[in-house]
Length: 308
Image (cartoon, rainbow, N blue to C red; front, side, top):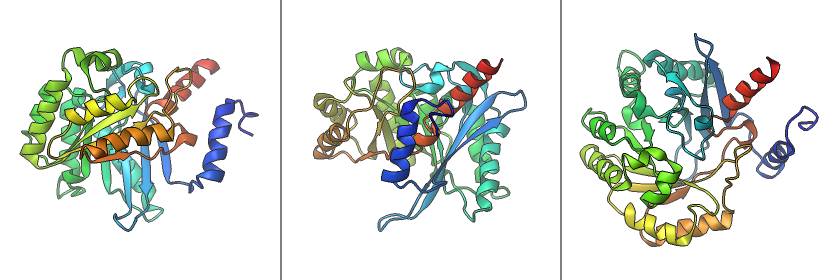
């Protein structure tokens, strides 16, 4: 059916595997494509995680902070579409409100916010911090900043500024490589803010706020997934209040990059755990809806061009 609708063959295979083998519950991962007043579009993703014996159920919203992204990471669909503009504080706040209204119809509510959608949050610092403060206000949502995570590529001056805000938000550093040469080839801004400076700023933030720093590491087959790279990463982030979140890459149509096998990912994780590093492998969610950042918007833009 998907192939008949013009979708590529791999999309039909993804849907089949998630429906029959993963038994993906309907609505557990939902992506929204919002049109702004100027007709530009942004993505917002909602992920529901059922409770386990060790954790409560939670519903997380992944919000965008910019239309597109100026950073240009080699493995990111958002970066491939370029950068248009920053979102206003109201446009960030409204993502939370629109999704909350939708969830209320299903008797659910948001428990966590992550700034891991489109854009680099630190490049839109004032609007991002303003939105967090607005959500936290007792006269509005009274939503604790402790349930908010800001993901950044590592713009050091803003990480340092954030630690002085008095907001106990969680920090996630998009690291993706254990050395500057490789990281600079993947993330050009690393030439300005190298790994040592980024980790020093992250450690200072954790010490000042008491909040854990999560190091995000997208696993790319044959690029950054060797066991020696895992050992170097362990030495790099082995400090108090740190955690490594391994993320097998979501495939991007037309990209030669690919995720490693499950066994390869687990071997990488084992090296970190043996070194005493708290480590998880992020469950791949929403493959059937292009849930990786920027993919749905990219498809919508391409569709618009095709119709023009």
